[in-house]
Length: 163
Image (cartoon, rainbow, N blue to C red; front, side):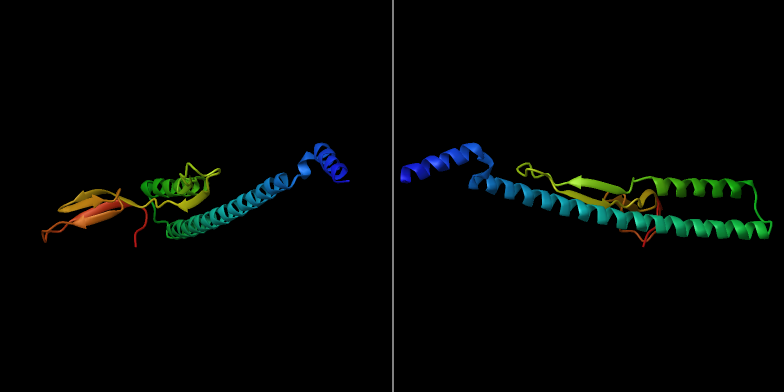
């Protein structure tokens, strides 16, 4: 009977090799891995949607301010061609800001031993200093301005909004 049971087990495993307990362990690992990937992708989507909503809100607020400026200038009949060009430029920049993903960085961890790298999403600051006058230095890739040892006046010009 032991012989018959062993023979029966061999026949069953040959007929259904995917039912072997070790194959089942691999299947469980696969499903757990897929679930982790789904969770990571869902988290990345949520982060991205939050960043996009913030960008939309900023563009919407800036557009509202621009519309108010245009209305006031039109009501007061107080604008010239240079004003129109500036408004058109600002409108074009708002359109570009809304459509562009230039301020969003998709990254992955650089763990070469990992089977699948984890995705990360972060917002990149587009604010930076580009020109200086006087005894100051621009450091940290244009993000920081440091005044020198003198007490002289100095200035820095940049793009974006600073706090």
